[in-house]
Image 1 (cartoon, rainbow, N blue to C red):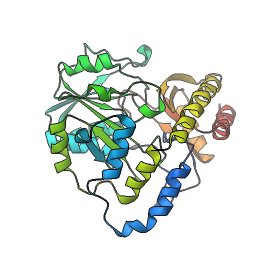
Image 2: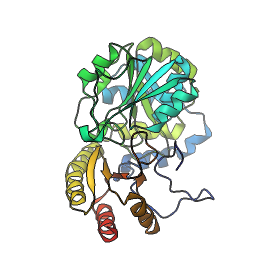
Image 3: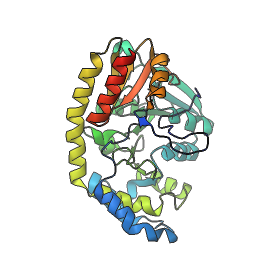
Image 4: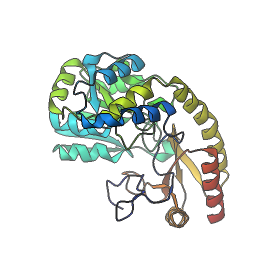
Length: 337
């Protein structure tokens, strides 16, 4: 398994998507909201024009939804773009990453020429941060909630880290949880990035944003491609952010389905739930490589965590999907185990 390989690998050697039941990518299983679908259809003809480089409508929608100021915004072609944009623009010498975590943090840091140091979190301690022991660095990168462990650094922990390092907080899954964002902490030492592709099920469009200190926002906006957010992504984002019904349905679905899914997973022989949050679960089982391959033969994908620093081939990350899809996975797991 390649070091920086991700979930969601549904494509064959010819680049065509196969008929997979995909639990390897943590995307909202409610799919496109009807408002987003309608916005895409209504605006399809507009792709003959360049996107609005100022993204006026999208910025207004984000500011209204998340109570942020436009001068603090950096619009993104997916949250992952920010790691490359920020690290290449600022060129930190030393980056500390509590692991296990999203591999693009390391990939982007190394691409910017930084020295990367892991700070290993322990499963027996529920992958909790030990803020006092995390070494000082030019930049510390945290997931909140962290992928794949599900740990949720507190706002106090983030502020404590910012006393000795710049802290980049990745809140790509925060909309799945009824918790306060770290956006209100944004300063010269604290940056927050958020994905919109996961919560609104539009990973193929790529959309995200960062909230940073005003001068840094101006610098980064000059450093990025002026058309980095395409026309349809802008229109989809405006429609999605206004769809309160879809967001409420998502939180209602997740609260019930996650509890059901966890309860059933814990009853399976040899399966230990060790982490996860939002719409994903981290499990450990000794037969994980065998289970992974048998599920693939049954056209079901789950995420091997063998290439996460701090984990090994015994760990699997599994998305929470619809009841029918979850039952299919659970029944197949039970048969295999």
